[in-house]
Length: 427
Image (cartoon, rainbow, N blue to C red; front, side, top):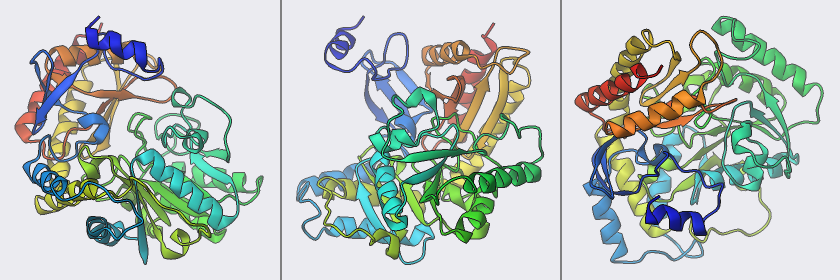
């Protein structure tokens, strides 16, 4: 056990998850690579849990942070804040929500917590619809709506949560149906559920479930849900903490794959926009955002230094068409992985879009999750110079692949080759 690991265990909680049998200390990064404290270099296919969106040590972001740090780091929302306004303006425009207002937080958890406050206040209801296999953060209210047992340490909650089918296409009672019938069955289930409960405030859903193993329903599912919800005045919250900013390649936001019935009422974001800085936020129609009848502030949400980082990062992403790069390079990567998967009995499915890809592992010849295989692949790829993540619903058996959106074709091929060797080593 390293000295740092021993110190970690002596002062930090036991439930603070760490990857690897011998945990890794990352000391610095550049581009799509990071280095550990022993000097080993790794190709980073997880980006600090989808947070290093553009690149490590991106010069444009580093310069913006340095210049802002030389002026002022923080003043709180009690004062006018130019960098906060300058970042809110393009986010409001990009969100697709009409008459949008933006509120900044420090994390996705806090963003979802704020969205739940807005929705329940606006609707005067504490009933929330959420998706099975979902994850929305670690706060008391966010845990209360999380549909993934591995990340839900308590059943206590300020909310009444009802879970809806549809977040996992290839498992559950509707898995054998084609896409159209799958959507119809999920809509029928939603209608039936709404007939047995008091009017909910909102449905909150990740367009692609992150911690759940990069699973999703068919395109158009949430558009069909939205028709049912809108008839009843129920809000739709799109949790874009992991899917936002072009990561899925085909769309800038994950909700746009379900946009036939219009944009969500509330959108939450975090992770990638800061490229490592602590930025989260909520976008909502003005009537929803302004429904609170008490004062509020955010001490650290929207602080000048994080806003400078976020604006530089967003500008770089748009000017260099990283969404397009995610579509092109991600398309090559998923086809490469599917070719490998066809020859590896442990792989049940390769799924996802853009640079948000999941590889689900099972015990060969069964549909039974194999978390030991996932752990073994994580160790093998690390030993070979590649960092990936893992997740999943009933058991943690899905590999999560989400590199920075500036990933090159050569780096995608390198990472795929390492992953192939690790998968083929499973016995």
